Amino acid sequence: MRKVLMAIGTAFLASCASTSPSTHVTSVHVDLPQSMKWSVVSDRADNSQYIKEWVPEGENPATSKWIITEQMLTISSKTSAESFQKQMFGLSRQGCTDVLFNGPQEIDVSGHKTSVGRIMCANQLGKPFGTFTDQRVIIDGTTAYVVTSELRIPVSPKAGVLAFGKDQLAEMKEFMLLQRASSKFVRESVKVQVQ
Image (cartoon, rainbow, N blue to C red; front, side, top):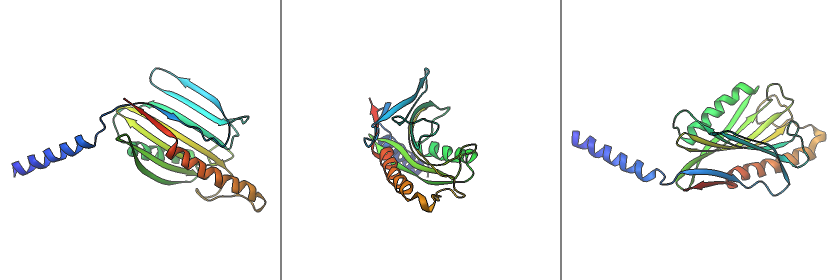
């Protein structure tokens, strides 16, 4: 029995070793959607963390319909990208009247497991809007890279339900196009730099 357990343990360790990446993530790079011009509205960093934010050119970050954020955070312990994203999903409940999630879905990039998901918020507390936020999480050791693409929408009673009025057909069509672009952006335009 002991030999069987040792064999299983050895096989498990070998499978873990073969799936763990042989490279380290050194940074991420985002290719902003080309459908519009973007302005940097925030670019702050310290020794171990940074945040960058963009909105469409000429828009105010407080009222913009679309805001893209790239962050690097130091986390207290190692975790998977999927687990980290689930924690972020849970935290989003504190800032919204009602939430709904899609994902997370794991996507492999250069041997690194990344996670993609969407958080839908009916009404951000203290704000006059709801949100659809597409998010990509990349973890390497105790460093987390988080890219979010947040679309702001009219407040609705239920998360994931669009509350555009009958006279807002053009705005609803615009949102549907932005929603596709946002999802495509976090899935295809976040590049992982490794060494």
